[in-house]
Image (cartoon, rainbow, N blue to C red; front, side, top):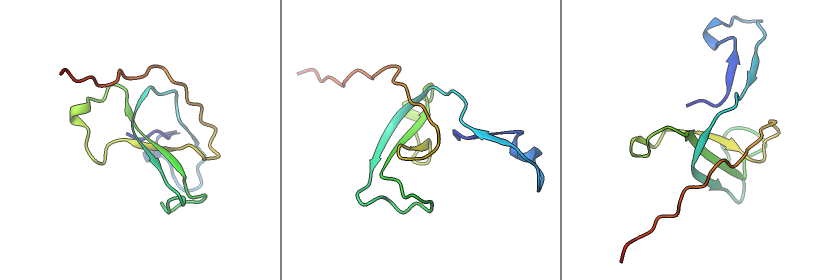
Length: 95
């Protein structure tokens, strides 16, 4: 999954072309939260402190691989709006 999309698609771009880059409205499920103190060196600046790992909301949990998902840096300058749509029910255990 890649959150960021280009218009036109990358394979239609040539050197010198212009394109729009953004995240279309997307319903996702948060599968992990990474908190790093000090901020993590991931190859870009500023180094992220808190990141969400997300997959499409309809991605089956049992098919979730280690490399699935995409990250959202909560401290990024990117204009991203996050809205909580629902919260998973807590896991209950029968005694």
